[in-house]
Amino acid sequence: MAPLGTMTRHLTLIGAGLAGGLLATLLAQRGWSVDVFERRGDPRVKGFIGGRSINLALAERGLHALRAAGADSAVLDKAVMMRGRMVHSTDGGQQLLRYGKDDSEVIWSVSRAELNMTLLDAAERAGARLHFDRRLDTVDFDALRATFVDDTTTQRTEHSFTALLGADGAGSALRTAMQQRENLGERIESLGHGYKELEIPPAPDGGFRIEANALHIWPRGHYMCIALPNDERTFTVTLFLPLSGDPSFETVRTGADARAFFERDFSDAVPLIPDLEADFEHNPVGQLSTLYLDRWHIDGRAVLLGDAAHAMVPFHGQGMNCAFEDCVALADHLERTPDLAQAFAAFEAERLPNARAIQAMALENYLEMRARVDEQDFLLQRDLERELAQRHPTRFVPRYGMVTFRRLPYAVAFERGRLQRELLIEATKGRASLDGIDRAWLDAEVERRLPPLPVEG
Image (cartoon, rainbow, N blue to C red; front, side, top):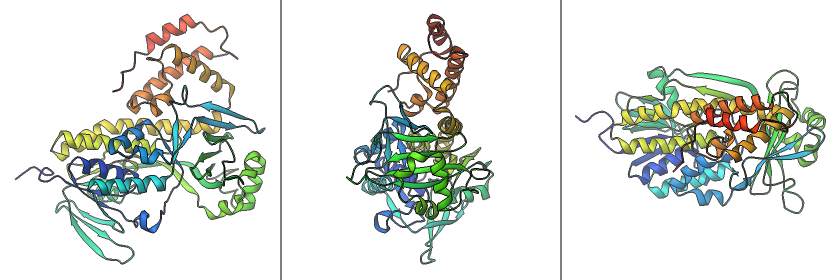
């Protein structure tokens, strides 16, 4: 008898969201027989119904995956370039902090709905079979049978599988079924903050009301607003606020509360959001948590990826990019070995440490975005960081650049970033400007502490 998981090149994906659509495409392109089951209806027919609609920031890791699937052009056609963070201070002033050295280093604001539908089309073109209105209900890991329920008709469907691949998000039904079988070491840590979405409509002339090619941030210490551009000339505004305390979603409850709060702390944003009260009262408060698992797979029968394995807070814009990188890595491991258990184990060994690293960086970035981007010591260190990046391009790469514009392992970027931050703090301590810094000492320290980065292919 053939080893478990090696008898057929058939795989069953749970979830037809972003990661599910991309992974189905990559696997079908490589000759796998792929079935995808999704609990919701087909968004291309029924319209997109999303749980979260925070705009997505597409960066190099995600673009690399889309290129592999042949979907990059269709996505970029509807994306809006963002050069940097436009920081809105309390006095109404604005300052653009570039993400990279020039327009070759930017990120792209993309619509979750449009991206999802593009990837579903790509998966079908590649030969994947998509089954909508099919919620995973039970899994018999011994008999290799899964049961799905259509919640609109209560009809039940049985499906025999070789292996289940869970791309069904932070509330993963497959993860729940796996946990009932084996302990995955699940831990969920709430940030204690939530979010609510608002909208900046187009200007009367049909254009953008504020600078289009930027991610706008109103940092206010313990909370903040951000706004990302859409190709319809709108901006999706997201208010991030503690769940308790003052101010919080406990104290800012009604549309009238929201207007008073915005007029006090985000006064320059108020004229931009004409439906502030209605948006605030209509849209739910979203939760922000980090999901940690010690294990992502059960031998060759099931494996998790993306948010189902490592959901993170959205403050580095890497949740989707990390999930897409998972898809490429899993497809590569499945191509290298016919044994599913070995492939799943190798995938987990490669990706779990990197997921932990970007989860940590996403949490750190919330503090930077809401409290640090307009502080003098942060701006001074940022200026020195850019100078050192020019002087030592193979050794000193800003952590944001390593994460966003390169495909170095997240764990490498995390550790290099720690070493670089120590050097920046040391060099700028007690200084109000970069004048008088001993550049010779600094150059020597960069060469001593930071070996050259590998050249990416």
